[in-house]
Length: 154
Image (cartoon, rainbow, N blue to C red; front, side, top):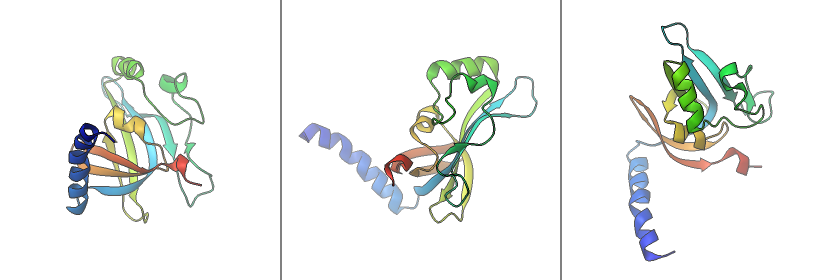
């Protein structure tokens, strides 16, 4: 690795290491990933796509729970992970008041679980079944790193 490249990554690695030691970063398994749409003028939010992973359940691997809502049906393949392009989010924001990119993360022992939101770029990086490092905050969560991607495990 070149010296400049190494110097560029060292502060980030150091920051993650410090945050982990301070207990700010939590390692969780992504057990659910969803897109929640809030209609204009009120009304109940719509879960447009819900992808789940339950290592103790009947399903093997990540799967879609329920049908994909018509707002996303043409943009997401049934077996593929949920990823939202910039053009798709712009189209959704023109149609709905709020678009949320949510996930459910459970401690790796499966005891403590939380639902929260991510920014779209972080949401696109994770898949249900991944083990990730996140920082929870009042405005949602921040993805620190994908520690152990589901697709890389046997």
